Length: 188
Image (tube, rainbow, N blue to C red; front, side, top):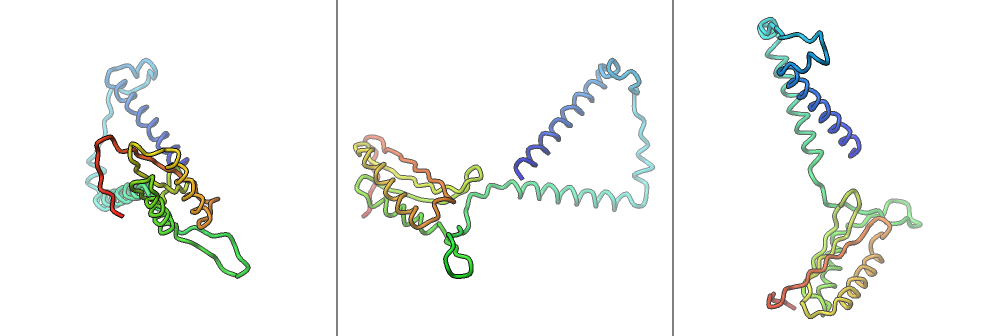
């Protein structure tokens, strides 16, 4: 879908640029150098089109179609960052096993927040550039040993990989270090 969108947008962009350059060139007289038979002016009798009995219905139908296409285009390009259920590897039982990753990631963030090196943590599962990503955001104090905080994040991600299908997810941990003197209440 993304490749089709990019090709369509590229073609529309090129078409609009060419039409714009041609219109300016025609108005300034430069188009006559490239196309000697270009008319000096265009006489269009709009009365025959607009006075026809079917014109209001046709204009309304074209307007409705264009509005529908515009809304479809906008809705198709809204960012959808949430992830639905993930399929679990098969078992001996018939059927399909699925898991909602949201609660597992929220629990992983809570476990990470309980680590003494981490002040607070939040987790989410989202789609980033077409890939499903587990994102953990953790905040640490300025005097925290970052190696210990990273080790805590690695442990939480390893535990999470035991619960969720790791082959369907990528992970990202964002560590934020508080500035010196910045106080944030930690509730236990």
